[in-house]
Image 1 (cartoon, rainbow, N blue to C red):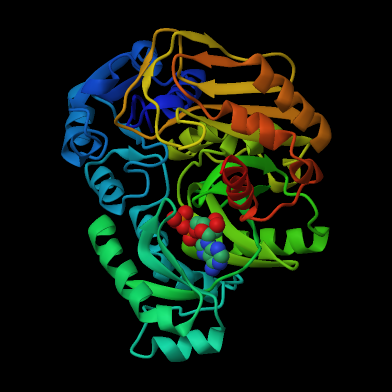
Image 2: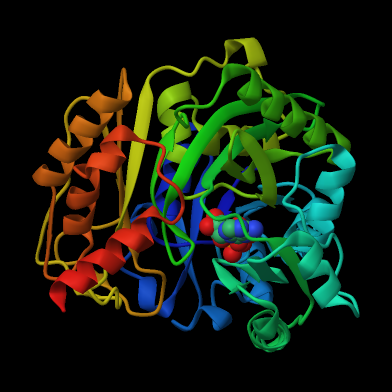
Length: 449
Ligand code: ADP
C-alpha cells in the first residue's frame, strides 16, 4: 500500500509520475538535487526534499540519501522513473528490505534482466527468439565463434546500457582489439568488463513489446512500438503500432513475451526489445521500468501506464483483461532535446519564450515553462510531443502541425530536425531501419562540406 509517494527522478517523467499519483489521490514528495529546485514538479508536489548536490552521483543516484528522504518525509513508496536508479537491483532490494514499496518488479528480476548475458540466457530458456551469438561471456576462442557467426559481428558489454558499450567488428584483424577496447570501456563505465558477441544485423528495425503484470498472476501485453529512428543507438522518434508486421507473427511474439513474464513472475510495466529483420524477431534486452516512449502505447490503448504501475505497487489486481486491450489508431512521439542542431552538443540555458502545442490528439509531456533554466548536469530531453489519430498518416500530419505550433526560445533544440524527419519521404512510407537516421545525417554533413 502506498500512502505517500517519493518521486526519485526529475524533468518530464517526474511530472508524469506526479500527475498519475494525483489522480489516485496519493500525496507526493519530490526528491530533487540542488540544481533542480525550480523544476515544475518540485513546485507542484505536496512536499519536496533536497537529496544532494547537482552531481547525480550525489543526489539522484545516492541510495542512502533517497532512503533518508523517505524516512524523513514518511513516504512509503518510491517511483524511480527511467534512468538513474530505475534498473538498479541494489536500490530495489534496499527499498524492499526497508519495508517500502518499489514501483517496479522485484529486485531479483531487475538483476537478471540488467545483465545482458543473464537476460539472454533466460530469454533462450523461456523460448524467445534471440540474436545468434555467444550466450555467455566470450571464451578463449573468440575467432572461432566469430567465424561461425560470420562477420560483421558486434561486441557488447554484459553490463552495458544507454547505447554504450558496443563495438561492431567487420573482419578478423579487428576482433582482438575490439574485444579489449570494449572490455576496458565497460570496466570504466559500468564496473564490469564482461563482454559477449552477437551477429550484427545489418538493417533491422527496433521493435518492442510493452507488457504489464500485477502481483496476482495477471499478465497483459499492450502491443508493440517501432523505435527504429535512432541516433547513436538512442531513440529519436517512436510510434505505435509498428507497421507492416503480419498478424500471426505479431501474435506469436506477444504470446512468447507473456510466457516469459510468467516464467520470471514479472510484476509492473516492462518492455521486451527486439531487432526485427526479414520477418523475424530477435530479443536484445528487457527494460524493467517505464520507458520514455510509453505515451505512444497509452495513446493507442487509452490506458494510463504510470497509474497502473502505482495501482500494481499498491497490490491491486488489474481490472483490465487482455480482451479489453484494443489498439485504436496510431500514435507517434518526437523527443525534443536541448541540443545544438548540427553538433548535437547539449544546450542548457534559460527558456525565454515557450509555447506548447495543443488541440485534438496532441499531448505534450514537458516540464518546461517560460524563464525556467535548463541545467547543464542532466540528460538533454526537455519535452515529448505525442500525436494520435485514426491512422498513421493523420497522426503524422498532426505531429507536423504540432511541431510547427510549438516554440522553445532561448536555447538550441532539435525541433527543426524533427520537422525534417516527419516530412521525410521514407518516414512517410514507414518501416525504416535503425540505420536510416545515421545515414541521413551522414548525407547532410556531406552537403555541408
Ligand atoms: P542498450 O542497452 O545500450 O540500449 P541494446 O542491446 O538495447 O543496448 O542495443 C541498442 C541498439 O544497438 C539497438 O536498438 C540497435 O540499434 C543496436 N544493436 C544492438 N545489438 C545489435 C545487433 N546484434 N545488430 C545490430 N544492431 C544492434
